[in-house]
Structures are given as C-alpha cells and as structure tokens.
Length: 629
Ligand code: COA
Ligand code: AMP
Image 1 (cartoon, protein in one colour):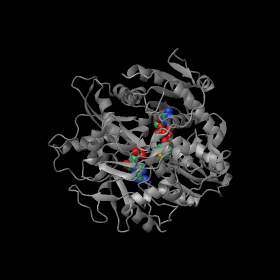
Image 2 (cartoon, helix red, strand yellow; image 1 turned 30 degrees about the vertical axis):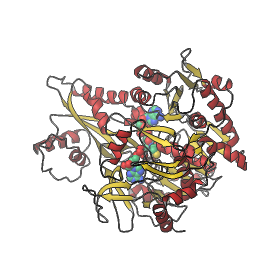
Image 3 (cartoon, helix red, strand yellow; image 1 turned 45 degrees about the vertical axis):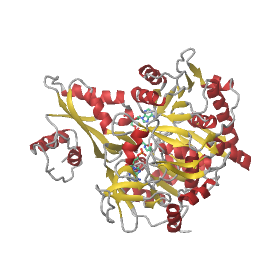
Image 4 (cartoon, helix red, strand yellow; image 1 turned 180 degrees about the vertical axis):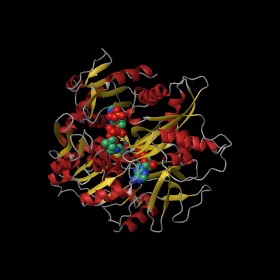
C-alpha cells in the first residue's frame, strides 16, 4: 500500500489501524477498548489490555528462537571496552537485577530513578523496572545535582540506580558525589540506592542506604515479568518546560509498545535481526525509544556507544561502528554530523571503512540545515531522512517513512505526517492556515498510541500546557508551515525552549538561575545561532544599583552558577552586562528581537518598543561577546 493509503486509513479508522498493529505485540489480555475516549481530553489506548513491556522486549524473542541473537552491542572507545549481550544474556541479567530491585522493596507502580552514564547497566536497570512493573525515570548525566533533586522530589523514587562515574571524552566524571548532594537537597529521600562501581573510580557507599550493584545482583533471585495494565505508566521522562520546573512526561505500557514496534519497520525499514544504532544518550527520549525499547520490541540488535562523534578517537568513529557491527540504520542529531564535517570536511576517514551494509541515516532533535543534509547525502550516498518529533510524542510526528514508501526529499523539511498524526497549522484564532503560511503547529486529538497520556501526577499542567490553546488540539510548541504537497516545515519554537546540540533547554530556567545572583536586577537569556550546536544560550544581565564593578568576575560567577544549578549540558558560557533590556510598553522583554540582533538578521523595530535607542546598546553589547554585526 502507498503512504497515502496507509496514512488515510490511520486517520479514518484509527481503532482498526492500531488494533491491527497491536497484533504484533503479546498481551496477557487483549484490550477491551482500543481507544477509550470516555474522558476527553484524556484519551487512553488499549484500555483493559494487560501486558509486560520487558516480556515483549526480551523473553518473547527467546521463545521465538532469537535467544542467541545479539540484543545489545556495547562499544566504549573511552574505556576500550566492547561487549555483546545475546537476548538470553540480556534477559537473564535484567531478570536478576529486577530481583535486586524487588529485594529493596520495589513493587509495581513504585518509581526508580536511573542516573547513569552510557553503560549497558542503564539499559538493564530500565528493563528491570519494566519487568516488575516499576516506573523508571532516567535522568541525563549532564544535569546538576539540583536538577536531579527536582526530579527526585517530583517522582518520589523508592530506589535510585547510579554508577560511580561517567566518562566524557578523556574526563572521568564522578556521579556519586552529585547523587549524594541531590539526595541531601531533595525533600523526598529514596530508601536505597544501587551503585554500579566502574573500574575508573570506586564510589564510597553509605552503610544501610547504598548497595553495590554486583553484590546486590549476586544475592538476588531472577524476577518474573509482572503483568500490568496497558494504561499503567512504563516511565516518566522529565523535559524542559517554560519554567525551571521540568515536565514529567508519562509513557504508558501498551500504546508505547505498539507504536515502538510499528515504527521500526514502517518508519526506519528495519527487520527483526537487523542492527540499528541510535547515537544518543539513554537520558533523552531518543535513547529511551530507539536505544532501548523499539529495537528490542522488534527483535533487532541495538547499539550503545559511549563516545562522541569526534575525538573518541577521531571523526571516523561513526564509520568504524557502522562497518564493525554491520549497522543498517543510524539515527542521530544533525549536530553530530556538523561536528564530523567540521573536523573531516572531505570525509577522509570514511575511506577506511566498508559501509556496504549501511542503508539510511535518520536525523532528529533539532532542525536539519540543508548544508548538513547535503553533506551527509553526498558523503554517505544513502537516503538521509530528517524526521521531527519530541519527548512528549516519543516517536516521529513527521518523517519519510522508508518502510512504507520512500517519498522525494525536500531539504529543510522532515517530509510528511507519520500515520496516526493529524498535524494542522493554525493561526491565533484557531483557523487553519493556507498552504505555505506559517502558524502554530498543532496535532488534532487524539494523538496516536505512544504519545503522552498526561504529565506525572499533574493532569492540570498537561491540559494547561498542551491542550488549552485550541480545543481538540495538542500544541507542539513549534511554529512552521505545511506546503501544497503536505510537507511540513518546522521553523522555530513559539516558547522559550532552545535546542543546544540536540538537547532541549529552557531559557526561562536559566533566567531563574541568573536572577538568583545577588548582583542581578533583571536578565534575559536568548538562543543565538551556533555553527556546531545549532543554538547556544546567551545571557544579558542588568545589574542592581551598587553592584560590584568587576564585570569579568561577575560573568565568571554567572557561568559557574548555571553550570552548578542546571549542569554542563546547558553549555552556558556567554554573558554580557547591559544597562537596560528592551521591552514593550507593557513591560515584556523583547527576546525575539534580541535573538535576531545576535544572529545578525534583519529585524523590524517592534511597534510597541519602549525606547528604540536600547537596541543599539544591545547590539554593541552582543558585538563585544562575538555576536551581532
Ligand atoms: N555527564 C556529564 N557531563 C556531560 C554529559 C554527561 N552524560 N554529557 C555532556 N556533558 C557535558 C560535556 O562534557 C560538556 O561539558 P564542557 O562544557 O565541560 O565541555 C557539556 O556537557 C556540553 O555537552 P555537549 O553539548 O554534548 O557538548 P560537547 O562539546 O561535549 O559535544 C557534540 C558536542 C555535538 C559532539 C555532542 O553534543 C553530540 O554528539 N551530540 C549529538 C548526539 C546527541 O547526543 N543528540 C541528543 C539527542 S538525539
Ligand atoms: P526533544 O523533546 O528534546 O526531543 O525536543 C523536541 C523539539 O526539538 C521539537 O519540538 C523541535 O523544536 C525540535 N526538533 C526535533 N526534531 C526536529 C526536526 N527534525 N526539525 C526541526 N526541529 C526539530
């Protein structure tokens, strides 16, 4: 069937469409209602169904003869380690660790925070939670203790699983002191932690609270899969909102398993047994969906890489991985390709490797600039597919679904709506924009399986953040357009979210941190264009009367404060002191205009600006730190 036929059916008969897809998943009890719409705007998929996600990801494939096939390949150039887990080995390791969690009192519905570097134990911890019906919440390693504490307070985990250290290039980053600090800061205290001791650093363990992973596993009995409701949460993943308080995106078990499995063949054109690599981090949604769940639910082989696209040891790292493991499809963020292109513009390193098994590159996480797209196309000579999605949806909203039909590529567009998604571009009054006109990108409810049913214990914030702009629609937070051929063009965010190296960050959160400095009267953080990372945060601060005059020292303190409160991942390094900020007459800071100035773009003088002369001062201040023209 053509893309058009499949897409049309998915919208005209969503229940029939997803009931068919659900046949590819094993259920203890099939759903009574495929789509429960009895409590609008809260839609629930596969109501009444009973399932276990870990069973579907591991045990089922062993029962079907894939036990000796590689499930997980781990490759760590930073430690010189390589390890392959067959489905049987991974299932046994997961079952034993699930037993260790159960020994610490973890039962169905309990939360477990996973704060881990990119090591197989992170995957094991996630699947072990799924096995016993516990809800995991993975926190990215590049966040600071305070961010971890915020998530501990919200998720209230019974247990936290962590490791002694992560490795960033040549640097060893201790995790345990950060974990200890975050537990001290948090109001909620976990009853225990389980720490994986890596050979690089041994963390000190607190008697009675902290347990050694290896010892805990050695003492544990393997745990069986616990049946859970399809609508029970599988995980919570926190993502940046418009304030410093992150949103706890909830993923259910049933809809997620169905969508993940369906996407592997239809979006990525992967067959069971193929090798699929998502070069991301388990702390992000891409890692959840495409390092852990989707490839395993599909019976494919997944790859975990503890390294960077460049510097570990060279810009040929991705090509080595592809040729060494016979990777068919790679999924990463455009920033990774910009990094490789910058160091090896003529792709000399590629010549050393056999790339014959490589069939497609998928990019997401940020807008893919046409330069990067064409460099990747010319270099790799395979389809390069830009696809658009977000933490909330958990899988692609728009893509060129290679497993259905390969459509013509338009550089700069993530192609068309994925089956199940009814994407509309609306104006401020909720009317649909004509083709080519830019508006707010919305998804007509109900969204397909796999998308968030709500925010963790916060239905009100879910409705207020996503469903209140236009009744019956989900607000993606992105602005863009749809062209005459139905191709989507994602242009920018409509909120204060910025995208730094494919990582989503809130400038509002950074402003909250800057404002907490005693010398800062007010401030603004904008996302300025960056050749490597897409965007980088830039701070503009106004000082309180009587504040110290040593601006260099103050700037150093502000940079350190953001690193300490949010984490190195914020990549916050540029700040400038200004006398005042441009505002509308009603007092709204003109961040959009400042961003245009920073990027050296033409801008219209805002009609409501309080005092136009301020913009010259802002331009001069931005020039001083290397922005604007
Ligand atoms: N633990 C601790 N610190 C971490 C970390 C972790 N798990 N991950 C990143 N950091 C640190 C980095 O060391 C860096 O610190 P620094 O300021 O001291 O140098 C900082 O956080 C920023 O990290 P990052 O944005 O990743 O920058 P980088 O310069 O180290 O690498 C890229 C740049 C482009 C190579 C890298 O971001 C990349 O490969 N990105 C593409 C893949 C990807 O992860 N996409 C995500 C969604 S698909
Ligand atoms: P995250 O939730 O971290 O995955 O970030 C999601 C946001 O990243 C989206 O709302 C977009 O703003 C941006 N994004 C992700 N993929 C793309 C893409 N292919 N093109 C443009 N923007 C993207």
